[in-house]
Amino acid sequence: MKLLAIETSCDETAAAVMDQAGQVLSNVISTQIAVHAKFGGVVPEIASRKHIEALPAVVSEALLQAGTAMEQIDAFAVTFGPGLAGALLCGVNYAKGLAYAMDKPLIAVHHMEGHMMANHVTNPDLEMPYICLVCSGGHSTLLRVDENFEYRLLGQTRDDAAGEAFDKAARALGLPYPGGPQIEQLARQGNPKAYSFTRPRCDNPYDFSFSGLKTAVHNITHNAAQRGETIEKADLAASFQAHVIDFLLTPALRACREEDIKTLSLAGGVCANGALRAEAQRRCAEMGVRVFLPERGLCTDNAVMIAEAARRRFLAGYRSNLTLNAVPTISVTGLQSKVYN
Ligand code: KG4
Ligand code: ZN
Image (cartoon, rainbow, N blue to C red; front, side, top):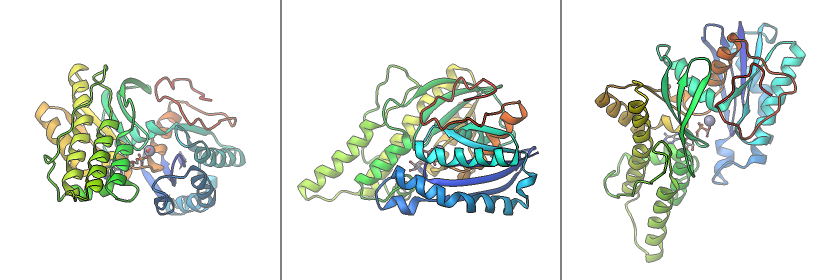
């Protein structure tokens, strides 16, 4: 069995081919970052147009790299949500077209489940149950992951997602979009203890909040500019990053302790952050928790992660109808029905 997966939920047009055993046969990503960087963030209408332009070539390239003809594909998978409505629709319609034309099954994949499954591609020894911390540009979510696609929501962000906070703090520091990698680079020369920020209080100890941190960075840079003072931007970047890492890992490790689960998996674009990866490894070792990280290239949006989620669903008998629609907002919990749409 070979599966072709498509991902277009935000600003990457991606396609991948995977076989039944989970071997990655190709992984193609066409990024729109340069187009959106001019505007300081993703412009939804432009994202949709660029997906439509890129999809045929990205899909052809994925087949070419896999040495596979379209006729040899046994199922088509696509991200149906959450994400930008117009962007999602491009991938959903393309995959539906292929499934219809080739008369092969269609598998709808939840974007967050995709991020979570990236870790299984990198680490075949990752076993359920585990605690999963998904931190991307759109989500900061803490889940308990069990067999049979059962995900229990433990906590989520009350305001901004972690990646969003990185992007907004970067903007306040005068750094281009996307801010995560920029802050990580600048922070390497800074002192993470230079600034201290208050830990947000949430009623649910597994919830996250990053808007206070973002506002604090904004206020520091803004006030300094008004006074004509210069600040050590590397120190501010390093302190901001250290706090985001602490605010993410503290609830995640608390969940490992309280759920009595000794396995933590990190997922999503923010997990490409080297300081987060190192700190997760350090804290988990201290607590006797095994930590699993996707390889860096599979942290940010890609279609391999969608293929892995689809492969598991396909083998378990999940199928989608050709009436599948894009769903910009949808929870990853409760997707147990064998046909989802
Ligand atoms: O998972 P992703 O590619 O897209 C969403 O599903 O949102 O995540 C993108 C986010 C952006 O906010 C980006 O700034 C952040 O991940 N990111 C990072 C790093 N690389 C990407 N954040 C911190 N450090 C990084 N190295
Ligand atoms: Zn994503």
